[in-house]
Length: 58
Image 1 (tube, rainbow, N blue to C red):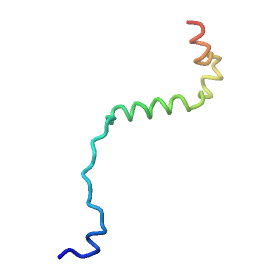
Image 2 (image 1 turned 135 degrees about the vertical axis):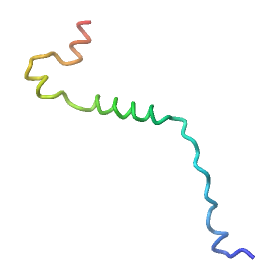
Image 3 (image 1 turned 120 degrees about the vertical axis):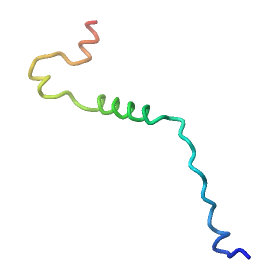
Image 4 (image 1 turned 90 degrees about the vertical axis):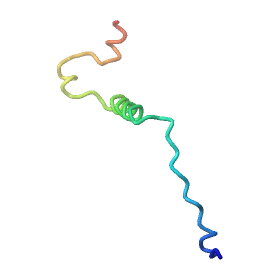
């Protein structure tokens, strides 16, 4: 005879495979870090134009 405690507990569900691969997750993380990181001080001191100016010149 089942006990009330067992009836109240939900059955564990098997893990669902993700639609996104680990490679895609890591690439998205790297891209987000690159976009959100301000330019380094070395680049500012060397007088190199920011990436947005490089794109306009191309």
